Each structure stands twice: as structure tokens, then as C-alpha cells.
Image (tube, rainbow, N blue to C red; front, top):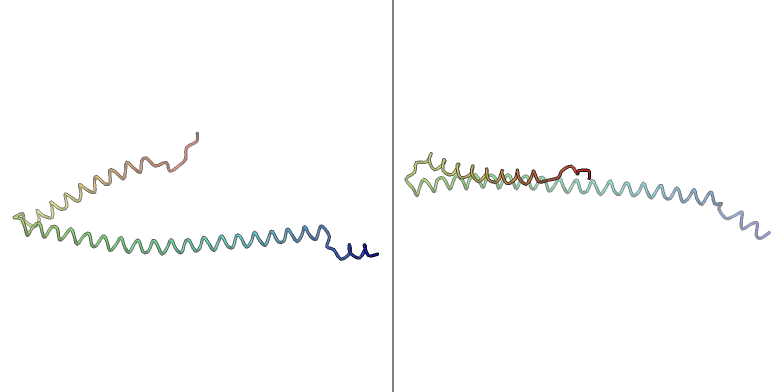
Length: 119
């Protein structure tokens, strides 16, 4: 009789398997929720970094413009070239440097394999 009462109080295999499946489902749901939270956190960090970089680029651009204007004014002050000629000289130098950088960037961009090719 003792043996029968022990079997009656133990959960069945079906109940054990059902518990394991329920635990696996809840573990999977928690893992998905954690993954979603991690992605949201990374997006928030990326947004903050992008805003900071955007502000920094804007400040650097304004500083660069002011330095170029200073260079033009210094060139006009220390030479006999008229102001419009100084702007032309500095502008031409900037266009030449920008053109070289664009050519280099275009060459590097063409070397990229954006879409993997079948082999």
C-alpha cells in the first residue's frame, strides 16, 4: 500500500513534460523581451552618438569656414592681391583638394563589395 500512495502523489510524465514546455516558453519569451530591450538600448545610444556627431560636424564646419575667411583676409593683408583674387586663390585651392578627395573616395567606394557574389 505504501508503494501506491507514493505513485499517486508523484506528478505524471505528461505533467512533467507540460511543465518543461511551459518553462521553455516563458524562458523564450523572457529572452525575446531581453533582446528587444537590448536593441532599444543600442538604438538609444546610437541616436545620442549621431546627434553628438552632427553637432560636432556643424561646429567644425563653421570653424573651418571662419578659418578659410581668415586665410583670405591674411592673404589680402600681406600681399598686393585684391580681395576678390584672394578669395579666388583660396577657393581654387579648396576645390582642388576637394576634387582629389572625391576621386580617392570614389575609387575606394568602387572597391567595396556591397552585395556578396555567388561563387
